[in-house]
Amino acid sequence: MNILGINCFSHDTAACLLSDGKVVAFAEEERFNRDKHTKAFPVSAIDYCLDAGNIDIRDVDIAAFAHQPGVDMGRAMVDIVRRLPGTWRRLLLQPAVDFNLYLRKPVFRVRQGFVGKLIFVGHHEAHAAASFFASPFEEAAVLSIDRGGDYLSTWLGLGQGNNLKPLSYVRQPHSIGEVYAAVTDYLGFRPNCDEGKVMGLAPYGDPIYVDKFNELIVTDNEGGFKVDLDYFTYHRKAGWCSRKFINEFGPKRLPTEEIGLRHQDIAAAVQATTERAALELAGYLALKTASKNICLAGGVALNSCMNAKILLKSGFNDIFIQPAAGDAGNALGAAYYVWHTILGKPRMEPLKDAYLGPEFSDDQLVGAIKSAGLAYQRQENVEQYCAAKINEGKIVGWFQGRAEAGPRALGNRSILANATRTDTKDIVNLKIKKRESFRPFAPAIQAEHAADYIEDYYPSPFMLLVMDIKKSRRATVPSITHVDGTARLQTVTKSSNPRYWGLIDEFRRLTGVPVVLNTSFNVMGEPIVSTPADAIRTFRASGMDCLALGDYIIEKEPFATKETI
Image (cartoon, rainbow, N blue to C red; front, side, top):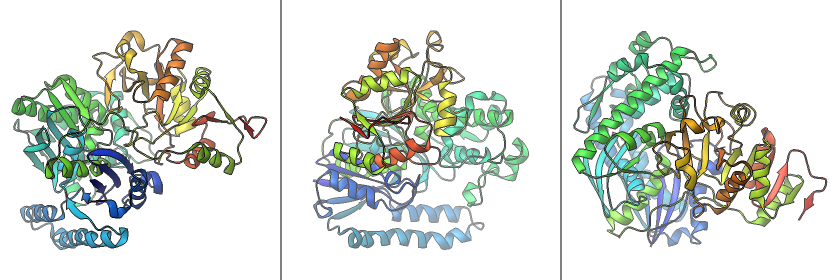
């Protein structure tokens, strides 16, 4: 049976193909149309999934959409009535919005030629399914924290076998994700896009505003919380932070304005408040479920500092966050939910890696290089060659195999550099990524050596945990050690990615250090590269020194001949 999962009703549209319960392909539409966080219908992502599965749209038995228009409309009406008379505009608009969503049903059939069954899955049910059914756990507490979806911001439940049992939820406009997005906007960044910048800025700040921020989100010790809405306007669709917020914390930062101490302190406060609220929700789940496992989902689960706090302090022994925890992952979750919960099919093997996107043949790689008119060489041992370049201080674009799912580059669409040099961070931020100097980089570390470098080590294959670098190791890897001594690590096993692991191993042979700096293969404002042409364009436009497309090497200082095989 083929199930096509689709996320298409908001940002980060995506598609996923499940064949007899196994994930065949998953990709975000932004990788194809090059519009970061796109809202476009995922036509290209769907086409890719079908091609990867070697099937036609007519071979799809069920299309699972990660949204329930009817439920959303009903909750919207309740929300509107609750807050009359100031919401007449939404009273008029919401039925039109949901009618449009219902229209997608016949349009999808006609436009795509689909003849199978359509099923709509709730937003948070899809989030929960994407994490729990991808996890190695037979049972686990499940916590989905988001800006919102289906008029809920937060969902708490228990996963057992092929079932998900809801235990509690929080309705919008009370939302941890909305508060974090509002502060992201207040700090001069793009909400729903740049929250990672706020997380990276937070360790520079002092906790002088934390007590006041803790009053903005108040938990109830029963799996719920309330936001003091007097400080915000997001629920009125009129911006983000209210005049009261401005009066309390000072003027909003302009995007072109220099980041000051106050901005750093505000970032520290919203991060601390997010961690505290999430910890209390997770603590409630630990008591309610008596489980030792927790699965996190939703866009806020991309906050890897928060995730680590939950792992270390909430009473759970084990944690799982799937690589596309945000809305894009709901394509996976919708398909999983149909297969396991609606159809009652047994669990399959857990999601062990994120390499589910497009890949390219040697002929396609060479064709792209020749089309660009570039000189190249083929290397018999590309891992050894690139490790030597990294050891020399060169910045390497690394394009291998299938693209990763989710927003983190995990070694197939990565930019790699020397983590042992003190100048690497500034070089990559300014010359390559062209982004703010305060933003940290991730270490990719061989899993078998990770405990030697990381305090309270826990495997982090999807780069979704921020953990402390051991004090004795911080001087060894300065370019991946953040100002507070932490790093958002990726642990790499030989079984999950032999070539990537091999490159790190070659670097270890040269330096004694089993760590390289890894960042996503893109420049600021663009999605991660998908095709060889994307990689070549980004390589040429940036300060990278070397590009490895499979076994083929391109360098900024060109080879003497066009081709050396």
